[in-house]
Image (cartoon, rainbow over all chains, first blue to last red; front, side):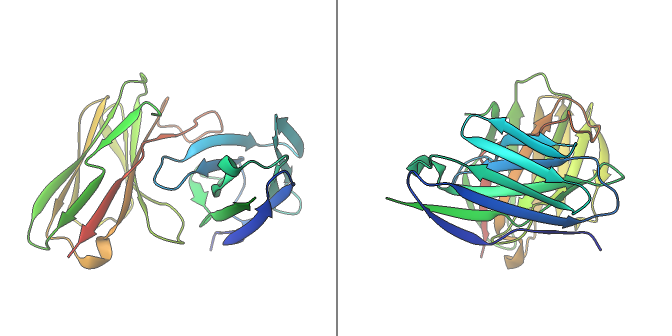
Length: 109
Length: 116
């Protein structure tokens, strides 16, 4: 079967750095997405990776290793507003989106 | 606001009721989606419409009935639901219905459904 694994919950301190991991086992790979979802709000697009390596967007970076079936989202200089759930999703060989259950990130002062 | 509006935001219904969820987008997108989001579970794709034609129906029970009258509006009609159908129902839209890396989803804030 197809599977996306990410930690259920993580806690970090304001101003620090946190890395949210996502591992996947899917039938084929056509890219990986990260979305952010604040409680009671819509998920919003953060990043898309299809090639290996690190892509940086301000305080957020996303990394992909296709050979390891692994990605991470790196959040720097954490702010209280970064408290949210982070959803990892993979496009499989049929271009179907396979979703992880999400990682709830709690930021403490 | 993301450009995708869902109403109502909260809905409580009995198992014998009939209700509808509404989704509206004015982003000029051609594809619209219904997803079910349950606590600590992955998003479940329910239906996909591309240019107002249903292109995907993931074995969803018939008590859920979608309707897409035009490319800007999507409905989910609910009838004789079960308590296990209680969840957050998310609507999304994208430029087109092709699943590709360029096809980023824009979600609404969801309709929180409770079935008693």
